[in-house]
Image (tube, rainbow, N blue to C red; front, side, top):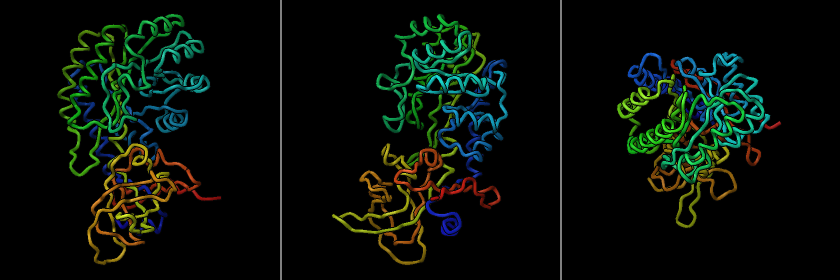
Length: 408
């Protein structure tokens, strides 16, 4: 792609997505579920619910839908998008196709979920109590914390273990049943999630977490129809990282699921919630070099991509590969540089100590693997508008899929 033509047409910075990569990742998830489903009894389904919070652009959700995947929601906005795009009904007939996996929501939000006929997953006894008072004699799912160490690229995204805010621990499950019985709530499904971004070296950790959760299900729950194993499927961000080998995950996971359904005849479906895996590698964030300075033995490359456009490096210390594209041909030496944004905070750093040809003002930078938790976490911090989003179609043409915000 000609980044300068795109920046001239749509403005800088700019999110750009590759439709072919998006479709490929959706197909990989579909094949993953198909492989598991083929190894299970015919009456058991395996459903993939794309986690919208990774990227909820309607064009991306349309590709998800066309690939045969569904979605999960964690806010009224995401629920509205899913209902609109997937044509879900309000009478619970589609409850297995759509999930509302939430955390610490208000009673008003619970009413919205109930009115829309969506199966809700609650992650605390307190929330189960609130739901029960509002809607006794209904079906719910609950989120448990299997207690095993979670997996993730940062402590901030680890969602299992003693230090996480999520789920109901094994010690409190008797109290859960007491509250559910009080309001005649039927626990239709059980969910747990270990964290975000595991690759091949953490598959064993993921499998151990699955085993721990299933042991709790078998020990305490009866009549459960849905088992939701969460997501966390990772992608390589660094040049030396390799893609997750999904065939190994299937190979390790399938015998465990086969054993569970033999002992647990009520199970009708297994669910997964991939988020990052689908849009991440398809997305790039491109911007302009706006300043160069040498201070205190460091070369600082200033860009118009601030932490309000991509917060992951500042928030998590995350790594994104950064590529320099020269506007004109010139010779320059290679050196270690720090790429930084335009927000007045010392934490506004895109990447530290990157060996690149020293750029000039007016050159472009491409921040790779920005399709997940990029635009969806962008903000108007310091009053800057959020950028446009563009899709590179299969035929090589470009389509504007979200206009840049403007100052009124």
